[in-house]
Amino acid sequence: MSTRHRDSANDVVTAWLLDSDPAIRWQVLRDLTDAPPAAIATERARVAHEGWGAELLALQRPDGQWGDGVAMPFWWTNLYTLVFLRDLGLDPGSPPAQAAIQRVREMVTWGPEWGDSPFFEGEVEPCINGRVLALGGYFGVRSDRLRDRLLREQLADGGWNCEAERGSVRSSFHTTISVLEGLLAFEDAFGAEPHVTAARARGHEYLLERRLLRRASTGAEIDASWREFAFPPLWHYDLLRALDYLRAARVAPEPRIDEALAAVRDRRHEDGRWLLDRRHKHTLYEAIAGAVGAPNRWLTLRALRVLRWHGGTP
Image (cartoon, rainbow, N blue to C red; front, side, top):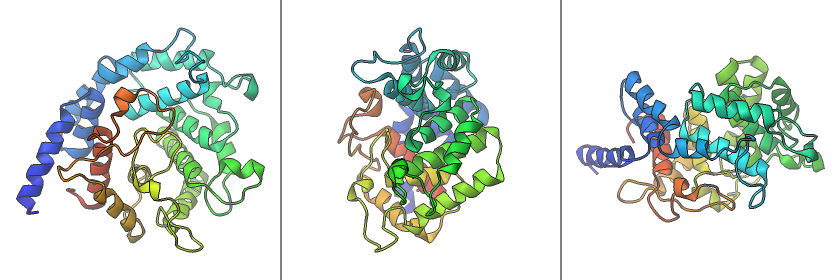
């Protein structure tokens, strides 16, 4: 494809992305265009009052929780609604966001099974606690105790695994990506700390040594499904999630990510968009997540910004 035709196709896709919810639009302006900061901030401010962001905020109960505790346990609906709000880019400084987070801080716990631990102090599994630390960083709720617990739980190979308490000494890609996202959000929010930065660097090396998808021992591909993309990924690892994390972590592109990048390009539909390949079990808010098999704005946004990070114009 000629440069002119490629640029024209990208313009069509960008217009399609912008013809959407404020949560998509402001991130497109920030990540895929050269929009001025004031325009980006104006669009982002709409997330708390219009569309998906306002919809999710309105679903919070007076006791600070989401859901009914019957169809899904409260811990799941609380955790993944807040993850969704973070993915939407809800401005954490907006009054609606601050009010919602204050209710969570004051009233929401993990329940008796975990000693009624306050929500932002987490529970026991690093795959969950990484997500909680990321939410605390995003919404400005600091937990040094949770950060320190995750640092203590890093395994010798550089990653993390929820099965470590049951004797596993090998890390899990699923758990590792969640913890890395949490530690990054903590440092972005509260300042870099040498021991946290060093732990993340070891985690990066765990992923990169394995080319983001292969066993260190044999070089065999670990799971072909990691080449297929879902939104939201929930607790699942996939190549797009890993690459988008490395982009956010400001890791310099290097040859060990080339195979993963090629997999992302391979999933691009001929019209320049990415389709939703799968929906993970217990995904909340399916209308926001998109329909399986259809062009998906979330995945297209994430894929294009990963490709832009790697080499400029995708």
